[in-house]
Length: 400
Image 1 (cartoon, rainbow, N blue to C red):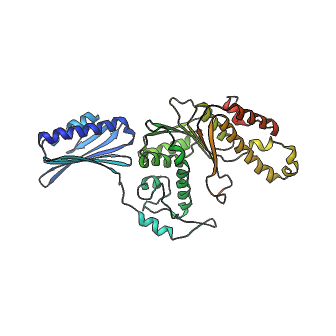
Image 2 (cartoon, rainbow, N blue to C red):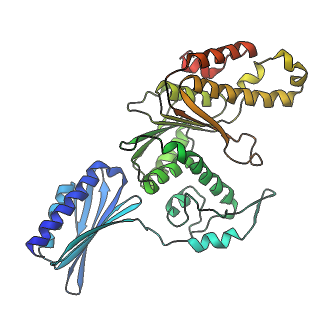
Image 3 (cartoon, one colour):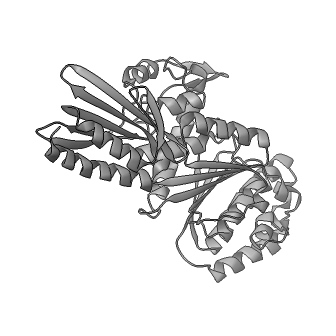
């Protein structure tokens, strides 16, 4: 290639270097094809410990990005044309160059062919699972079959052949609705910085992996995920899944929520089906670190059941099942009240159908203002009226 084209190519490669240095966690690989006559010569670079493992002509070297650029430019002098595909999660940057022109385009990554027909075939088919019917819905999914296949296979929803498993259609619909419920809240987060998301009691982190995919590869947002769980087994499983997917913007720690002290600004705190007061630990942590968003899908509610009493409802609460249901409503209602007192705008919505599980509420909280003393007084007065002392109040005030 002539000197003029190589100079232009150098400028484009400088842009790739900036992309790599700015967000190397989403870099997947760089693929170079040099052309001379009818022959092609290929080079491949993959990520390894902050550098690029670059192989061409049977020789492999571990280089920084400047080293890769230097090699590409030097080799370009010997060939008539080249093409470069710089792959990120969700995005391909393509550079083509010859002696006449150098061009670059950015496209949505297409790692696998579209499986749109797969959706169509299932949407007309009823699948019976535990006596209920689950089908793929007639909707534009947020987590799309085809584009998200690697993720869906890793979390066990899709078969190796690229089909949504019959017994996982319900789960697929649930995770997609989860993203739908969070999208509007997450859109309000700061746009020009890395969003740090803390998953408390993360378990196997399936929904966090889904959220990682959506924010990174669909919304093109820079994000970092931290998963906490006291079980070393599930933490190791999450680490393995992250490695399999190449999700380097994730870290996992086997530890109690109480023992975690963040070393960076936390923008989102998530707690999904954490049992009983573990949900309160997560919400309290979010409040203390002034997280912009707190999302909780509570599980069991045992704490207030044996605490609360309300004389006007004596005739109702003598029925155990009604007292238990009232305890559920009081627990999540008081969680919402305390969040509002701490300056959060709160909405409580159904996460999934009550036919799936009665524990189907999602609490969404967005920090919009400073603490509201009047709302806090109302919360404390309610504590007195119901004769309850919720763990959330204790955790917020670090009284363990």
